[in-house]
Every structure is written in structure tokens, then in C-alpha cells.
Image 1 (cartoon, one colour):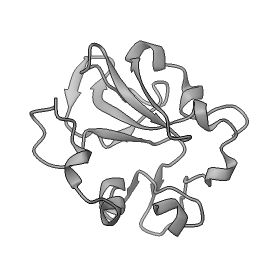
Image 2 (cartoon, rainbow, N blue to C red):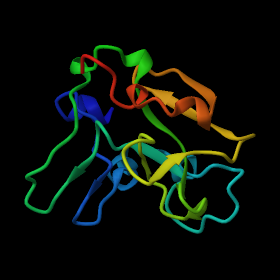
Image 3 (cartoon, rainbow, N blue to C red):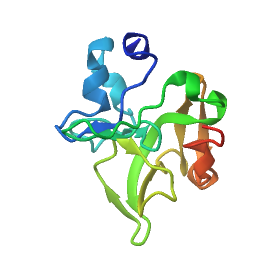
Image 4 (cartoon, one colour):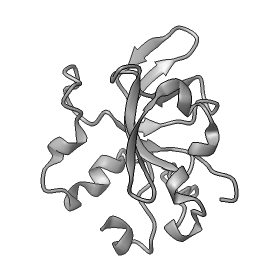
Length: 150
């Protein structure tokens, strides 16, 4: 629904003004509890689902950066992750953070959002609308976040 109202573009992950994708889509939700995984008991506010930062990234306060790709430009929607369980770990120390509203491709940063909380994996939604569970090690291919031919 959001894309229909915004020229076939999905929301970006975050704005430096402080609004993130969960707040942007909130008017389209009937229940904000869907933003919280039932098996994540330590979350006090926000979401533990991450948004594909590679393709639907960030807008700064001057609106100079806009990484939201129109849906029609996604050539392989069944192979591009949009959203999924997100656990922000630091690779070097294996430390868990609580900020997990973005989902990074693993080679993008030293922290990434590939979830380990569901039997060493997580549930991921793709641009075409299907979802599936994947082991976190199997998602280390950045083409799942930014497919070739994009």
C-alpha cells in the first residue's frame, strides 16, 4: 500500500531526522505488534525486523541521498531480500546490539543483521512477496541484498 501511494517506491530504512521505516509504514498497519518477533523477549520498543539497507537505505536531513529503488527496477524480485529477522552483531567480537531496524548485507559493514535467533537462522521476506527461513551463514551472498542487473 505504501508503494502504491509513493510512485512504486518502498520506504527507505531511515531518515537522519529520526523517522525509520516502522514509523513511516505505521499508518498502513492495523496492529504495530507485527513489528515485534514473539520470540524476542528483551525488546522494549521498536522492531527487531531489519529493512534492506543496500537498496532501501537512508535519506539525510537535506534529502540529498535517496536509495529507494522503484519496484519496477528490481529485475529479480524473487531473489532480493527486503525485510527479515535482524540481530545486529559485531563480527569481530560476536557482540549483540539492540539496534536492529536495518538489515545489512554481510560484506557491507562489520555489523550485520543476519538473525541467529531461530535455530541459527531467521525468516526473510523478498520483494516478490514470498518469505522463507534461511540459516544466517547461507545469506552471506550480497546478491541477495543487491542482485546483479539492478
